[in-house]
Length: 113
Ligand code: SF4
Image 1 (cartoon, rainbow, N blue to C red):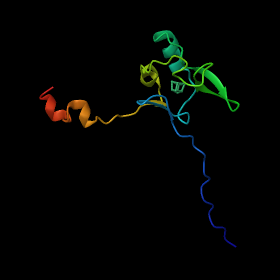
Image 2 (image 1 turned 180 degrees about the horizontal axis):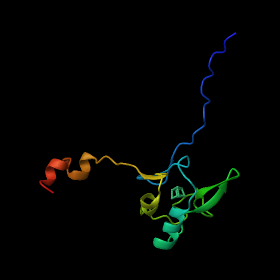
Image 3 (image 1 turned 45 degrees about the vertical axis):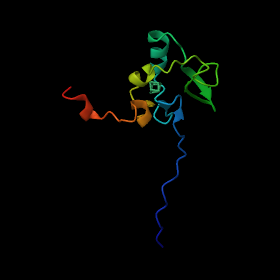
Image 4 (image 1 turned 90 degrees about the vertical axis):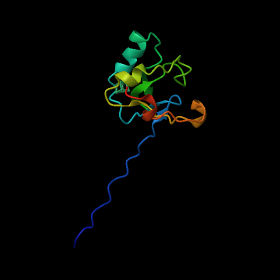
């Protein structure tokens, strides 16, 4: 009798959380190292990120608030710059034509810089 290989288990992966139009947080990539917390508290002096408990797990999140915005987040991107894993990430925004008067400023428009 031969056994057929089992399909790989389906792991439930949470979608990245969108903090603002341009910043996302993917808890799957987070090491819970606390660097973003330190950057937010000690460098930016905002304190919008802290260790929180969700579903019995320690993760990072807004302290005593339901959203980062309510916690005072200024969406400065300090957490994005300091995160070693890319858990906090900048979402690339596509420039809208209307932002540039109907003309997309591609690299060719900057000359030799
Ligand atoms: S710096 Fe990145 S990896 Fe570390 S706790 Fe913050 S989000 Fe998680």
